[in-house]
Structures are given as C-alpha cells and as structure tokens.
Image 1 (tube, one colour):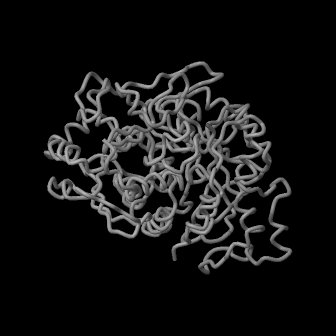
Image 2 (cartoon, one colour):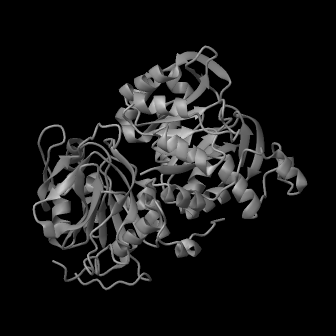
Image 3 (cartoon, chains in turn yellow, purple):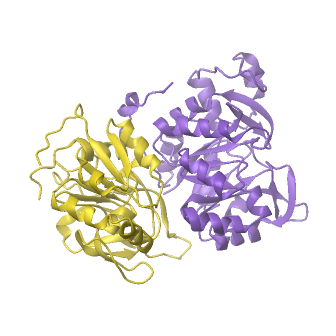
Length: 227
Length: 299
C-alpha cells in the first residue's frame, strides 16, 4: 500500500465504534483538520480506510468484549498486518497491549508487547496525586531528533496534553516509548509508536492546538517505511 | 497541575453575568467569549444554563455544538440536567462532562446511574454553598434560590461515594462580588473528598486565585466576572446580542464602569497564568500562540 499524502489529498479515517466512549469530539477534531471521518463498526469499511483510530473510554474488559462482540478483533489485526497507520487513544491505546491488570487479568489485542498497569495514588496531603489522573500534563522525551518523522514532529518537549485515566501502558521494548509523562510517583508511557501502530494516553482531540497537531501528523504524514 | 476554568452562564442565546447568582446582565455572545478564552489558554470551559427550566433545552444544545466545533479543550455543561437522557444529549452535542446539582440532591442515585453509564470522569457534582448563621455550610439549588437543609460536606462525600468524579463548589455568598474566594469552604471540601475540587465564586484579583490554590487546596479555579469584563473592555467584543434580557449594560459608555464592582480587577487568562507560575503554581502555559490565526470564528 503506497501512500504519499499531502494535506490536500482526501484521507478517510475510520473511527472504530464498538459502543464505548464519546466519538463525537474525535469526529469534530478530524473534520477540523480536514480529514474525512467514518465512525463505523463495519469490518470491511475499517480495513479499506487510509487511517484507523481506536478510541475508548471506560473499562478494559468491557471494551475487549465490545470489540469481540462486533467481530472487530480480526479487522484490527488485519489493519496491523497491512501496516495501515492505527492510532489508539486513551483506553484504545491500552487495548493494543498484550494484557491488562484492570480488575483482574485480561488479554488485549497484543499488537504491542507489554501490559497495562494502574497508576499509584499518593495520599500525602502535601503532594497529593489523585487517581484518576484528570487534567493537563506534559509529554517529554523529544531528545533531539527522536520525534522527527513521528506524529509528535514539530511539538516542543514539555508540551501540555489533556489526560483522563487510571491505568497506563508499559511496553516491553523501551524503543516503543516515544514520550513519557510524570504523575506523582509514576513516570508512564504517554505516547508509543512501533511501525504503523501508535498510541497516546491523552486525548489529542481535547488538547487544544498541540493535540490537533498530533492528529494532523497522524492523518497526513507518510509513515511508509517505518517498521 | 492547576486548571483555570472560565464560567459562561447562558440565558437564552446570551452570555450573562450576575451577582449572588441573581440580577443577570447580558454581556455578549457566548461563542465569541468561548473562542477567545480557548486562545488565551483556558484549560476547560464551564457552561451553565442559568434558566434551564424556562427555556427549551434545544437552545443550549445548539450553543454547545456551535462551541464544540472550534474549541478543542474539555467542555463541562450544567443547568437543569434531570435524567440520563439529558446527559446523553448534552454529551452528544459535544460536552465532555456534565455538572449536576438540583437533580442529584433530589435523587442521589442519578449520580450512580450516570457514573455507571458514562464513567465518573464525566460526572461533576455542582454544590452551591451558603454559609450558615451558626457556622457550617448549607447546600442550595436552583442558582442559590432554594434551600435544601443538606450539609455541604456530608453531601460532597456522599456524591463521591456514589460516583461523582469531580466536585464544583460555588460560594453563593461570594459569587459575583470579587471579594475573594471562600478559602475556608474550599479547604474543607478539598479535605473531605479524594476527587478533584473546582472552586468557584468571588475571584476578583490574581491573589484570590492564588489563595484558593495554596490555602484552599483547590485543583481548579473557576471564574466569570474577571474574565468577562476583561473581554468586554479590552478586546472590544462584538456585542451583537439578541434583544432579550437586560442589555442596557452593554452600551459601552461611562455607565458600564459604574456596574463593575470596584473589587473586580479584569484580567486575561495569560496574565493570570504568568502570575501563578511566578508564584510557583504549576499550570499549563501555551507554547504556541501564533496558531491563533488558525482558529476561525465559524459563523
């Protein structure tokens, strides 16, 4: 699949609808940056789009059940196989991992090796960190040229993004970790990328202009040759 | 990371502002104010329909979807929310969270139902607190008009137990006065609940924000007057309003200043955040302000 894209070309982004989460803000953000958006639970439609977004808010196990019930797990594996750029947002990013420890142990899609773990609460009143982690926080790790030719290209180290989550991913391979975020005692992976598989723990569609910038790169950058 | 949240009170098609949650005056078009706050680095926006019971809901839904089209930060909407269906409609229109007061006091299980259905992160319980003569605070409803007899701190704890993800506490005594925030109220709420607390009511100066954060331990501060008046005076807001409500206030002449309580020092969100940052408060500062031109005021 050869894709050489400039913002002028038409790109259709499938937003996988498996019955969880608010998909309207993702749709609005995609339209705003000039992409076509297709909210769908149709396997064939998903497989034929140029980009796929796996959203999600809620519980890991429910989400996996939702994907399974709609027969979408196969479609997502196919997307990964075809190297169609796939972006998991928030819970969608966590679903890409091998397994999660949210309320027991549950298998994920296994597109990225690693697990999903709970953030730690810090109860001391002086430096209290509350879980869920809700609000703005910075992403770090640009280290010179690391973000070039990724969806973080052009962002400043320490850019602010909007988070709402209690769990975070821990990829086995550190090379998958594109950016980290510190919250209380935790320093977690806030952006991951390995080949065509990408994820961000925050909500780019709610992270003002910096977040829209990430979506723009995801939709219009050419990710061919990154494996 | 402290959040700064402008509050936009909506009446019919207009943005309004009152004192002690009463005596509403029209200040402009909510869309223009929202767009401006977004560019200035507001961390979230709070929309409150102050007369939800008098108007149909469609009006509010239209305002939300217009806003959500060009504003990519979290949006919380409150006012007259009574059912799961109301919440669903508001989220579909583009809100990320809902703020519930009256309906939750009348039927606390609504909190549980909403949290189960949409997640705790989208359920904000709004508490209007009024200081009791003999000490303590009582929760009010209907924009400070109705007493409930419920103790504010007991209610906050109960709401969180039922699944509330955040508590928005507004001091009715201070609301719209600019006389400073009720630090005692805010700190007691912050100590009572493990979820983020948004403090509202009484901010007139930058120091007031700092107090609510440092002494009150607020996770977010919400304000209206200081930001709205700044927009009105220095940004030359286009005040084309629907002829409805008290718009006399808007005629930009000497009379305008007369309405402004001397305690309110209008400020820009950027100025406020620079001040807070210098004072050691951790808050989000914009890296790129040049992208301003990219946000259009969609007609």
